[in-house]
Image (cartoon, rainbow, N blue to C red; front, top):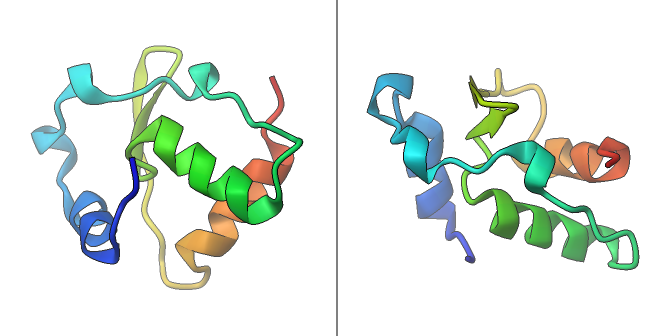
Length: 85
């Protein structure tokens, strides 16, 4: 799934109470493919997680937001480097 900038803005603005838990992906099921370039890993991560702002972590709903200090792209790059299975 490829998200447009508009899609990402809508996902970021979504209230936690409006999120359908059944549609969320558990981050522990996401596999980081280390043979991909950093950009490809980021695209693949978002494709797998579907909503980079709201996901499950071992059954718990996690909603993240950004204070504007870092761009989503930079944060996803950091996640792609540090997430280990």
